[in-house]
Image (cartoon, rainbow, N blue to C red; front, side):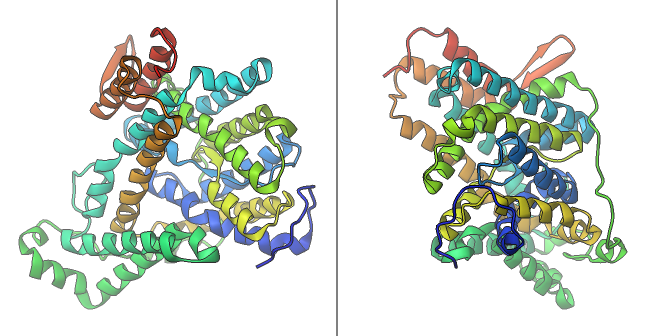
Length: 439
């Protein structure tokens, strides 16, 4: 591991290609997790992550050593959107979320960086992030127990599923707590690998069915699925193929549902830029400017959604890798982006990822969605505000109850509900309720 403090001045050198590949490896687990959970194409996600990073670099004058890829904040609305409007309609809402970033960047340019914090204080952002994590809790539990995300059908016998999910979860947690160096940066990837290996072992000689018959024979009668891991799709997939891009289709309901979700990652963007600035010793808020980084994030997200990929966001995992290696040259991220785009055209890559059994992903989701909730809770704690003050209590309580409870408000031909409603409600309440912060 290098400990050389490399300048942040942009330099695209062949010798940095290996480090760029390592940066992509660090991001890979989280990058492909989002499309695997939401039903999007992982090859498309690889392509849009690489292309989005290059777009971000162009807009920020190639000054920020950061990598953009799939955003966890949009998992819940994508799952809901794909089930309700299909992928094309959902992409329309995600494109609009990207344009919201662009609009925010223009406001920041005009009114200063404090603009967002005034309209989106922690008392709004914190509970919205919590809602994003908590509304997904049933999906994680269903998948960890071997069911589909909505719990309507069994895919894997329950006892077998919980063994696999348990291994994925425990290995992920232990890796994040005990691993050193690079391994600590890829707990999700290692957890998925451990769960996948467990599924393969249980598949041998019908061990899965034997375990289920012994511990829960009644449930086995309801299970008629295939082996835990099937490689047929992998064998049939071509080595090289153009990713299955999907164009957006106009859907006003998707726009009103998804756009408010962008509130949370927009605020998180500030934190990510401050973090990489602290690591490198540069003030990226001033140069190239937070308005440019927000603009780059927004255009990268809109571009990704126009092709059927998940929204992009700046990756803290990669910032951790930059901290560890002290390799600050933004050109390294150019290499990571190039490798991501190249991998997107390997057909067997996406087919291999889609062989991962549902309980493996369920085990990871148990931790992931809880962690999202904790991030929101930590946002409130760090703000140091009195949550028992009537103003703060009103805002937080209504965001949480309406968002988690699934309240839906009809507006003519479209409806606003769930996470989208909670986000809009939080912004409106913060603007109209008297007083400030409620300390």
